[in-house]
Length: 193
Image (tube, rainbow, N blue to C red; front, side, top):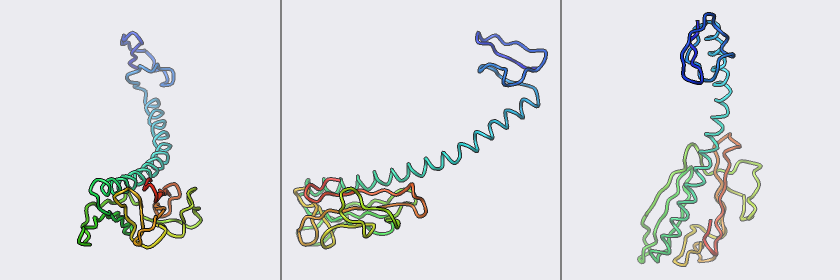
């Protein structure tokens, strides 16, 4: 038999087991073996359909998270340069680290922050990936105009080692995953990402 809960909350027992498809959404249990197998089969089917969707969603979320981590690191370096009135160098260390160094008045460098890209993301620009709409360059995964290193100045602009305004693009991706490719650009005059 089957135990059925009605919309009003009344529990009753059916003399013969109805099929699970004929039960309402408030059903508690169905004692028929064939109904339990059918329910198990439906659950398995939904689970197997959800796994590919879920894994793709997770991969895209990790790639988006890397964009956020990179943007926060670059924005924080710019803010630090303005607030501390010091040049702040950006170093993109392969395969997946961002190091931020403060240039002291003596010329020494002090590492003030480090970030690591999320997931399995690394600095890379897979073959065939076009440049960003800003067209700052796509020859390498990390592409800045001018001479390395690039740094934020106390006015918030991004310059190269010679003091010339530097624009740049940073590409990152997970090896073999086309959905994970992301890039950010930095406009040198304003230092904005």
